Structure formats: C-alpha cells, structure tokens
Image 1 (cartoon, rainbow, N blue to C red):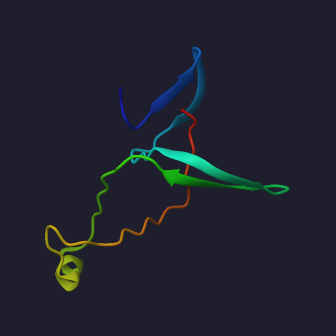
Image 2 (image 1 turned 120 degrees about the vertical axis):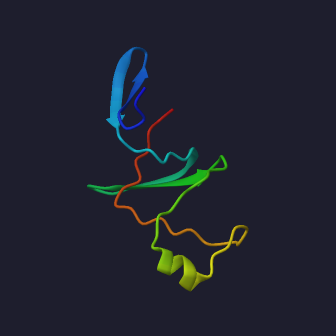
Image 3 (image 1 turned 60 degrees about the vertical axis):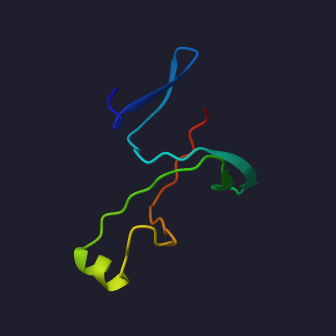
Length: 84
C-alpha cells in the first residue's frame, strides 16, 4: 500500500484518508471544547524515530555529530488525530 495515501477503515467503512507519513502513536489525555474549536492533548506512548533535512552549513554551524543529544522542534500546521 502506498504510504502517501492510506485509507483507514473500521468495519469495512472508510473513515479518513490522509497523506501523513510521520505517524506517532499517542493517547488522548484531555479535551477542552470551545464553541468552534476544541483543544486535544496527547501523550506519546511509543518511541519514534524522526528525520530532518537541513543545510550542510547548518549542520556545521551546530557542530552536530552522531550521538549528540538534541531537542527536536516540530513545526507543522496540523496534528491530525486518527482513532485506531
């Protein structure tokens, strides 16, 4: 199956299609409902591996080496919860 176009099914019905490749399993810890939007918070329940593409100049400026501990900052416009 093409990971860029996953069809999620439950009971033979399509629930949602998404093209997200980086998927992290989590558990809903809280839901705060508003009139129009709701805030859902998650805890991550499984280890994940992530990747980043940056310029070689940036790698050199940060003096990154294999084994260095870093803080990963994820900048995205959406976090899509998909019930499993």
